[in-house]
Image: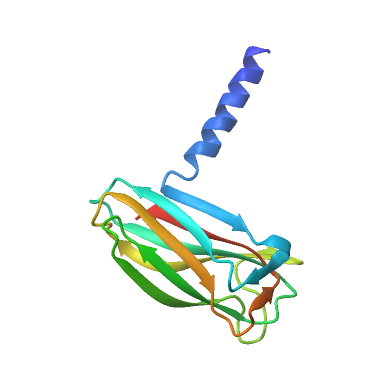
Length: 154
């Protein structure tokens, strides 16, 4: 390889890793056949080592434009390192009142990153277990492509 090629590859590699320096954790999980069954929750295990910094926690939702609703209700269960638990019911707004999809995308696919909690200080070191369950009135919810969790430093 030529030295200039190596330099370009190094710059590209460094650029991609440096662009998201605030990210502590991010994972998105595909929903099989784009139908989210209420009996098929999604799980995220996050190892937290920093109990000092403030964090923002986001829910990532990717939906197809054929999704029939303007929102998505979720149950979000959190199991803390000390085995205590909490449950939140969250409404994720995916479209405005006129029906225009929110988030990033065009055509048939839309990505939303919805702020769940701002300025969170994780009080315990260890593994936090997050569980998402769709909480819509339809047991098999079509056109949800994937869901995810993002935690970033404030």
